[in-house]
Length: 453
Image 1 (cartoon, rainbow, N blue to C red):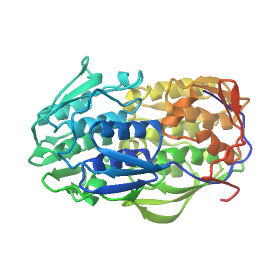
Image 2 (cartoon, helix red, strand yellow):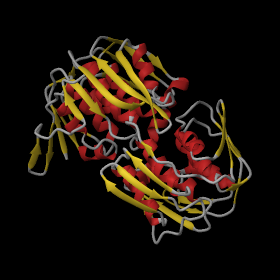
Image 3 (spheres, rainbow, N blue to C red):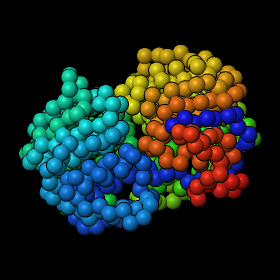
Image 4 (cartoon, rainbow, N blue to C red):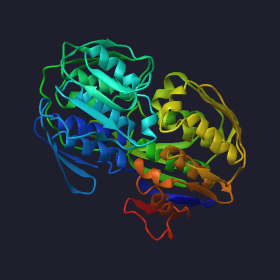
């Protein structure tokens, strides 16, 4: 699919971001091994999360989908998973693959997980290492354990693991394996990463203790299924908010957005840039803080970001680079080397995309330096099958002179189904082309209210 993005007039209105991807994955996975029935509303029906649900079905868990965005998970219990008939195809979902590796490590059977071409290039050694220390055997391709990977489960022992970098996926995989281990499992992080797994485990009755950067899980307690509503994905809402900050005259409200402090590092970075952002109606959703976020267009100034802030905005770093092209001064992003092993090398990809559009970008070993403000020009962009790169290019296209054409834009459905339609509902005139049948602004999702902010 091709996405055409012309320069935009003011964006206005309110929109609901799709359900949070990280929480959707974890809600399905932990409900599957809990006792009882869980109704998960607001579940993200994007390919990544649907792959996780299908993998759990293949592992013997009954999961029904009575309506759009709702899953009914009939927990099989910690010992209720069964050996799948074949490999579990995780598509492009690195989160799904890594967390499932931890979940099946304590089972008395082997599980093979595979994925698409992009996922098959992503290293799984960071999961294989701690699982190996716990007693599982993980096989993959090459030194970095590339997919497909096979987890030979069995009896596990609790360990104390110190990951070399802050990673919620590593931490979550180890904690999920720890549910089946003998003795306590402890993860000591070098910096705070998103904490959805430990929050959800505690809410479901697990014995989890959090002491600063040290998380300890003691097995033995039965997980009890808990129904929940998944809040809006901050990572998705961020594209709408940054678009509003950059397009002159805009004001956009993103409703019901997850505001977990381990996820909102971008808000802190944008605040340091002088962004006009307001948070209202804070509330609890699924044991997580949520609220409505309003962003208004205005001048931005350059910042330097790095250190402990990066793990709390790792998925939004490419979007910060887009904002930096319109900020006064040189923005420097460091300590973001993990982005080189995402769906694509996102540092190289953003340098390529923004340079093609006329930005002044220097690629660093672990980050980017972006000088601004710089006028952008529409360009032909290859998404390289990376949903966040495609959406970043679309946001940049809204403030570029001339049309931006994004090839391979179907990948956006990985995390934000209806992204283009949501932008159209706020006033953008982007056009999706699928085969010979382009789609314009005639379709507007119910989640968008034009001019309602």
